[in-house]
Length: 372
Image (cartoon, rainbow, N blue to C red; front, side):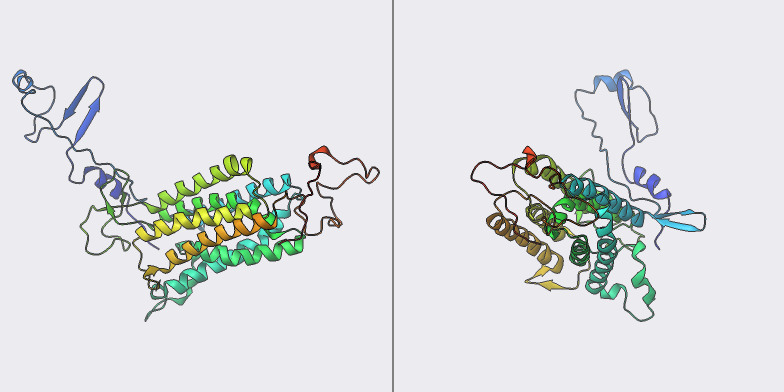
């Protein structure tokens, strides 16, 4: 486990920069000769003939710790961020699916399949694509299981998590695409929180930069790229992805779903398109010891592009197959689960009293074909 001294913060503030103090009513810079304070009359007379150049360096400091101890329990910030993201994703997905006719607690039941299988898949993908990090002479093979130290590949989690979600949806009797549409914005939020965990592990950064939000990494850190001078700042790709994911959530919930019929897997398609496109771009900037390439691109770039293409195809296909509204999230809407009624069930004593919310314009039929 890597830990980083708190003195790194103080060192970053004074590293090779001119000291500057800004106060109300005046602007002062330190005098290299050792004198300071209010300028003399002679110096005031010379202000029109000279310029004072002050360089103010700003950056994002690296965290000095990656975990804290709670009694005998050691809590890693990376794992805490992952768990926070999962909780938020379950909460938001549950609210969205319940509003569409799902039963309370249904998302939690599906998550019991999705989350564990997704974590296993994410770890497996990471280990397979970074074998030299875990398999070398004298390596501790148990570290393959140390997920809390970092190393969960999102694409592996999505792939394996989808298998778990499909199993959970079949057991719950609902369409997979209905669940995936409800999950999509929550999944983006969960990924954003997970990226914040990368910050504590000094992971997911790009090339050197002089931007004021550059990320500091101590040159003594094992994550610091070789061949670069101490004090080099790096692109905070984890921050860029957090912002990208947050924008995607806003677009889905407050723009696209209010203007378009994003059901039948179309929200999932937009998620794949949005996340895949953003991830492909960020992966191309990433400093990462990737060992596998395809078509002269990093394997993660290839998979991200495939995800974006799959999203486009899914939107087109599902739009053609299901142009109408999705009236029920259940696979057999005419036979709802025995322990609950769907939101589309009419009262048993008045079959003719159909809610106006479910009525369609004259001549238009709802699309009720089964489609997982």
